[in-house]
Length: 242
Image (cartoon, rainbow, N blue to C red; front, side):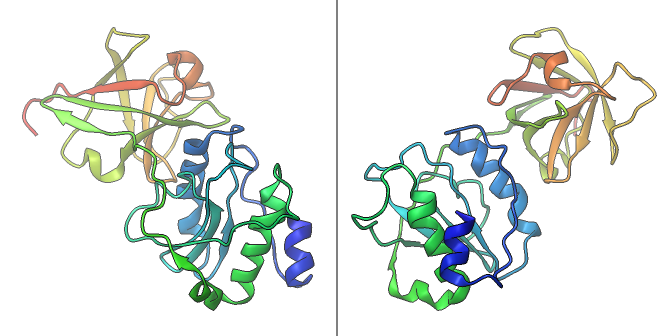
């Protein structure tokens, strides 16, 4: 893919890798990484995002514009987690010379290079009014209970929850339960760091992506709590009205 970009745009085009750690074929996992990375990229940048179990099928490709940043990707839900306005265009259909199994190289890389060279190239594309959007993990509060789920488990074993910073503005959790652990587990809320003198305590930390995480000091919270992406979590507040 890098070779295809440089062959089209020239060797002075800076190309960086964001991640190759997305689970194969896991579009929601890719959508999370795109949501986490994109706010930290400069305006005018072009992100080529390819998690594409439907390669070779009738699925479309797209260019999206989000807060001044471009994304080139298959239209399969990779842009689902980007908040706020999103403008999208449909990519041209691939020609007969492209591989049916490697559109990242033969279709999307060249289109990403075209957008990088000339952002106005999108004016020649047909607008895509309804891009594919995946169902989003929901977080809801009912009394003293907050229901949510695990969005992602990082390579340290921290469990990133579908709980954004604003979701706990008026809710202070003290315990959690999971599907595999129905007993209430005490939580220690930590403002900005992972270490705690209570080494066996489950920590609730606001992570760098803007979501709350479950963590353990020096250990894997995922293994300790038997949690994987998609697992349900209930946070419990014992502090009365809030």
